[in-house]
Each structure stands twice: as C-alpha cells, then as structure tokens.
Length: 81
Image (cartoon, rainbow, N blue to C red; front, side, top):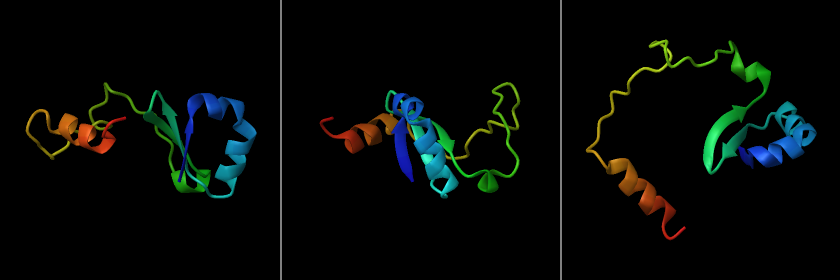
C-alpha cells in the first residue's frame, strides 16, 4: 500500500491510476491524515458514499477507552515529530 499527499496525487494522476490498475492500493492524505483510498474497482464491489445523517453508515464503535487515550497513543507514536 502506498501513501500519496493530495497535492502529489493531483500532479501525478496518470501515474496513480496506473499503479491502481496494477493492483496497488493508494492512501491519499491531506495535512497528514488519510482522507481516501484508491483501489482497483474489482476490489470495491458496491460503491457507497458515506452520509453522516444515515446512522447505518456510521455505527458507533463498541470499543471504549478512557478519555485522552487516543492522544496519549498518538503522542507516543509520533515521538518528537
């Protein structure tokens, strides 16, 4: 799996689509966060656009953690970056 910034993707659309056609999955990032994935159409099946107003699309996770846990884990992962 490759990761490409949105600006680089815009500049290299043909290259990116060629990679996807060869079976590569490309994660697209914006300001360091993954915002999309490009993958071969044969892997997608049915394409759905997320709708935050449709509860079936965004189900609450059953996983629970103490408030602040995500921040502690992210800080540990990022180190001094």
